[in-house]
Picture 1 (cartoon, helix red, strand yellow):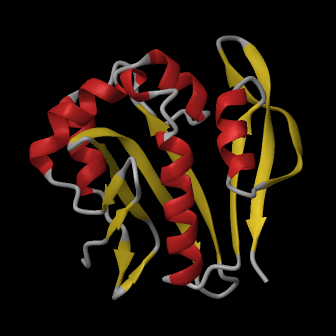
Picture 2 (cartoon, rainbow, N blue to C red; picture 1 turned 90 degrees about the horizontal axis):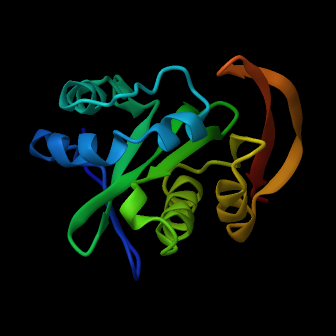
Length: 178
């Protein structure tokens, strides 16, 4: 699998999911707020080293084509979170983007810069025309990250996600390139 490195001013992103970093990623991901904000029943809490190792080792390609690419977000040389592209569709040139930042790294603009780097990568390296995601309606910080990167609201998927005995809505965002 080809390794990609994307460099910004505050962050560097690496698709080399080195298993030696699993303890640091697990420590960052072991946060109930991340589990709640991601809006996926697949993200475990508590998050353990074994969960990070399983994430690192999952298959992301078929033949010579990626169907997913995940990056570790580094800030000042330390892992700060994860950002990735999934459901990469080379027929319709579209993919999903998702990300999370560890608590001690939030509020520093790292998610905003990381999303910008990955958006440019998806457009320029993978020739994607459309990048999309969904954000739970209470996650205004993530919505702000998307808007700052040129993503637009496409609609609201009402009461679609059951968490803690309550239904939540997803706000659907996308960025489309000419």
